[in-house]
Amino acid sequence: MGGTAVPHITELTDLIARLPAEERERVERIFLVSKSVGRLHVPPAMRDWVEANFGSLEAVQEQTIVRVTNRITLEGTLFNPLRGRRPLPMGPARLEEDIIATQGDMFCDPENQTPADIFGRVRGKHALTASNVAKCDALHGVVVFHEHHPLRFSEEQVIDYFDVALRWAKEAHNADRGARYFFFLWNCLWKAGASILHGHAQMTLTRDMHYPKVEHWRRSAQLYQLGHGTNYFDDLIAVHRALGLTVDMPGAVILAHLTPIKEKEMLIIGERPDIPFRQAVYRALETLVGRLDSQSFSLALYWRPVDGVSEDWEGFPTIVRLVDRGPLYSRTADVGSMELYAASVVSSDPFDVARALRAA
Image (cartoon, rainbow, N blue to C red; front, top):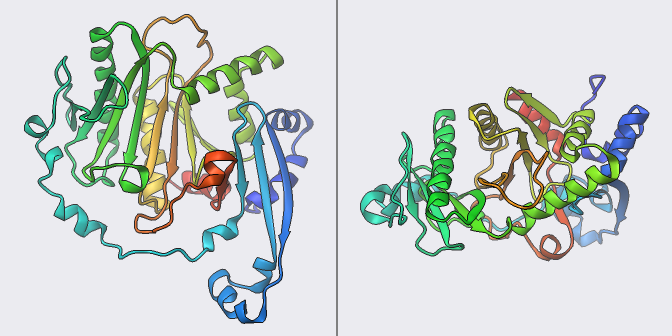
């Protein structure tokens, strides 16, 4: 992006309009973008409260909402930065005390306090696997980190966590040759759905078809290839790059996602989950936690099957989706009826995420 002005999501329609014709056509081929203004009247009795919480009456009385819809995957996001200033009920911030109090939990002694898979455990330098006690699929394992603190991780540790999970996938496939679809997920702390505070990730290997959200992306990309003669993911990266929303790493490209499922979502897209790709994942994680102050996050790996299948996965890259799950001690959930049944509602700005990535 040229010039020194710092763009914001509210300027997205103008940014797209200023792109060269070919780049603008590619953006509009994938994304439908619109902008609207929400207006309201603040009664006199509310004015002091509005000014104290939102900065000014004007900011509330006229609010710019940007709606972005991915025409290919039908994912959509409504952006309103003002929603990030809403007063939310919070409990006491005592994370470090909670972490100390859980020292000595079952994940601190996984060899004796966690079950093993029928094919045994996979061990790495910084983690080892366990079998999930309450499974969500027949092959469902846990990567138990040696590091107890869930928000402390180095590049070397992240690389090892992925290595352990991928080696588990091979062992699981050897145990069940019909299970070919691997899924890796890292839910950090309870706002992300983790039931145990100790640092850990999970993985599954399933049969018959990949999980619906992954398969939906594959089918959408196939239809895009048929309709436009070009790879969907290459174009998705090109669109984000044209808008200044990418950071290039040796093994992957990190995107500040234009249709985030929730706050500060990033996509890490590469060819394979090798060490350079995992280094890019670490960079994204470090940015989210260290620079964007995330206290809880969800991470998922979208990957091709580990063995031959009937459907076409040609051109499907390795993808990690990473998203902030909100303040730990807020009593308000980050997902409501809009996210479950309509479109995501987000207060964070992808351009702020991109700036933090570049600063990292």
